Image 1 (tube, rainbow, N blue to C red):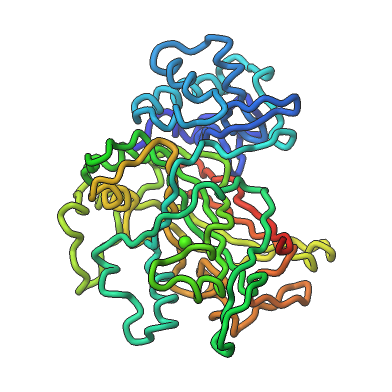
Image 2 (image 1 turned 180 degrees about the vertical axis):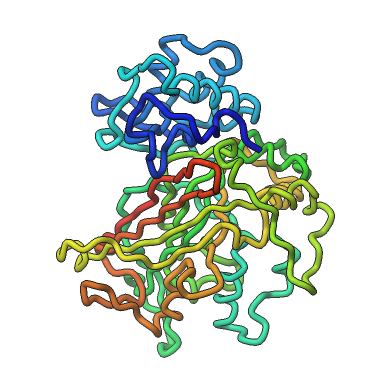
Amino acid sequence: MSDTTHDPARRSWVQSANGHADFPIQNLPLGVFSPPAGGKRGGVAIGDSILDLAALDAEGVFTGAAARALRAACGETLNPYLALSAAERQALRQALGDLLDIGAAARAHLLHEMVECTLHLPARIGDYTDFFAGIYHATNTGRRFRPETPLLPNYKYVPVAYHGRASSVVVSGTALHRPNGQRKPARETVPSFGPSRNLDFELELGVWVGPGNALGAPVAIREAHEHIAGFCLLNDWSARDIQAWEYQPLGPFLAKNFATSISPWIITPEALAPFRLPQPPRPEGDPAPLPYLFDAADQRAGALDIALEVTILTPGLRDANLPPERLSRSNTRHLYWTVAQMLAHHTSGGCNLAPGDLFGSGTISGPDRESFGSLLEITDGGSKPLRLASGESRSFLEDGDEIIFRARCVREGFVSIGFGACSGRILPAP
Ligand code: CA
């Protein structure tokens, strides 16, 4: 489903937007930034610039629903924007597209150079939930413990997840300390406390929750899409040694809660409309989703075609002036559950979601080593270290390493859009 905001012929008076890899006029993602003079406010990424939504609001150019939606998007957090309906988001998108169109009056005084600005978390995150919907990742990690039956019996019935930690979600570019924790390798009889030796990344799609629901009032699968207000890239940093020792019987805790990085721009469902796919049919012999997780429209267009890439920049690559090296290329089409199924399942027992809640999809690995979404899979638990162009080798992440995620949507007949980077560099343990 596309409209004039996706018109591939459309160009902007913001010259850098035309042909921009991430932020052409067809994207228009929202974020929160501070210009050099300070003052957090909402903005829209357009080419190499940010359109200042607070300054636009002050000029009173928009009217009606677009003006009301703009007001919700110009403050220090985008939670009021995330609470809007799809129709209200669409009214703002339409008005912003018209404002930035090459045929409209240029308003360069509303722009800031993105490189000169500080980007912030776009919303106050009330709760964060991490799913496990990447079936290749679930299979690869399960195989380490159960070679014959890698997937547990619940996997194809339940969109498996755990409640994560919202307080330590940080915006791309924020450096993070290697966590200390209890480590107990198999060769040792008792645990020791110290810096994680097996620090890893997880390549995930982040999902911004929209209006949400009241406690005790589940969201039906057919309405779930109305509560999904945007997408980002998400790195669920994971300390594998701490995880292996602590996770039974209640699941991840300190191995995951020290940091989660997200990309700063909220890519809207409207911008992603041309890049929707049918959910791939389940393999022969898999159970059908239970009725509360099945909706024909969701099956027809609930999946997303987003190409994902992971690169690493190590101290050795940096010193040798070498570029970041690619670790993986994957795609969101490898998710076994749609985002609507995740949301419907999350609320099915009565749990309430609120605007600005965040989901992680689970690690999105593809079927082969070139598409794996974690070092645990790429290096087979550290047993097959990677050789880098700098001569360095890596089983897991070392201090000074930076991991960078990128995402791009490409479809014939449409202008490609991207997500911007989700990056983070590892500092020594405190
Ligand atoms: Ca994860």
